[in-house]
Length: 339
Image (tube, rainbow, N blue to C red; front, side, top):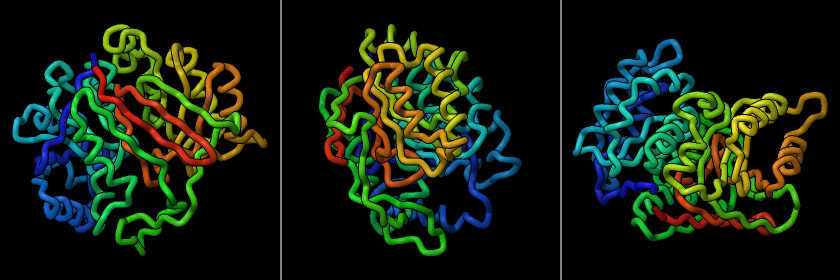
């Protein structure tokens, strides 16, 4: 049985940095995000880890874990949103107090944060939210796709929420000239399928940034088989994956490892996010990777979806039951908050 938190109106956001903190020269940008959310009725509580960054992390693992655990215990904090991702979140997993994680509190983020999100859902059956980070909410407004995070996280148990593919996406960051919604959305969005046909998939969502969640394989934090048995009664799983930095052969190795570890057993389909990586190796393209995986597993594969490091991105809920439909480049995802 999956347990779903609920985002109240005028909630208090706890901001902690379980991976990377914010460098001094970027404090003003981060403060702008906090002020923007305050203007929308939220209250903000920032931890000490937010303001520091050294040696590829915000603070030592013990401090990062302690601050996260404390915010999860605090009754006056309703949701936790890290400033952004990073590199070394995996260091804190063995220090997280999974037994006392509260079912009424969302954790929202992506990139390196997705290792924590997936671990929480797999170990506890509590839904987590893969979507925008806090810094990307600093604009005068959010684009339609990003803005859905509030609606999705305010869905009641037993209800559903519908999201659509974006109209346009951002090809590259232009930090010197951010738009009113932070992103520079210039390129037409087009969701693709390996079959080049209409595709419809159903299943329980699991996923994240493949660069980091692959490192959960073989650990106590990546037990997909136990999750299937204990929390979703063997229902099919629909994976969503996004690639931050891997070239095509590294992506292929990672996917084969996931397959060998049993992560793709009872899998109804896979969605891959847009990526600025996927660099071909010896003419081995990412389309080759997707086709081979689809053939091997006998499942549909959708790619270039709104997920990950090429914004904007849909808010995917780990543990939710979803129906995804793609036709002529357009996609819809209907997520059911079924237990």
